[in-house]
Length: 385
Ligand code: SF4
Image 1 (cartoon, rainbow, N blue to C red):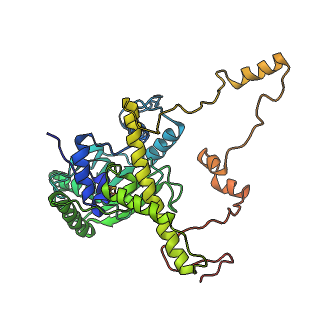
Image 2 (cartoon, rainbow, N blue to C red):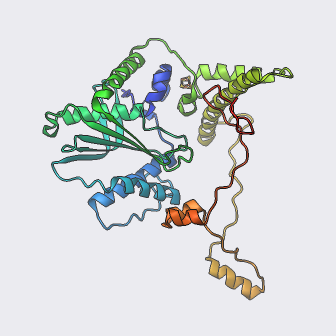
Image 3 (cartoon, rainbow, N blue to C red):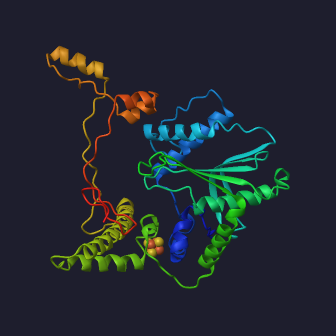
């Protein structure tokens, strides 16, 4: 019998759309996969970095292939280093600290079915402080503040600590939530986001999460709600609401737009269409993955086929040998002129930021249309209207 769980990783989607969990259970059951293969591999590399640092000191990470068979890339190594640099300094001292990484836990205080794997936590008894970390290899920024997934884990960790004598007498603690996301190039905070809150202030969130999960489990109807969360929903290819919305959008885009629309009307239509674009993208990527899976199985899908992309020819010998070849055949210019890395890469490599600042300048990028959450509008000349 399939074990149905409410995984904290998808709580944001469940909070908006009750039907997603029911549809996932009906069609995916225990086969649900929450992370892409690349993401899972990057997480494994980060876990390995921490494991080696804690338990096998002075051992270099040398794996070229991750546990799931994916290639270990330079980007994964760089992300894992950031993860380790943040966690490693917190040396746990026996009996005064409780530390766990990659721990699967039931979070019964939220729901009997709530079950997931927290990436890392550390409880410091003397400081009355709990640190919770999430590692994410995606591009879509994830916030630390009011992060429902991490709040569910906080509830689970506090449950298990309550059974431990180390916890006795501690009712009010500080909790520091951390999201480490090496590919977040958008957030102002960068790749490490943090939120600190008192456990008492989380009680209202625990209560709200209990109600959400209860409603998800006990609802007898399928109430779909389309939102940005659809783009990561694993059943988006089967979702009737997304299908209806996509069809409606196609009809809408076929209509002729009246000429001479005013600013407000233009803004409304542009925002509607941009949201529609997200929905269409969610529907298209969902269908694409289903079609790819069918073609891999050998099923035929009219008008679609799987073809290997055109690979590029690569040298199989080092650059020096290519240069020698050039000398033998009298051909010049086989080596590219040397180039420098970007200023950010130079800072990453260890050049002090103050030094880099002296030799660099920020050039204004191309003007770009961005959507804001307020009524205010900034004109080309910088004034607010
Ligand atoms: S695609 Fe969107 S509306 Fe459909 S089940 Fe998933 S989250 Fe709900």
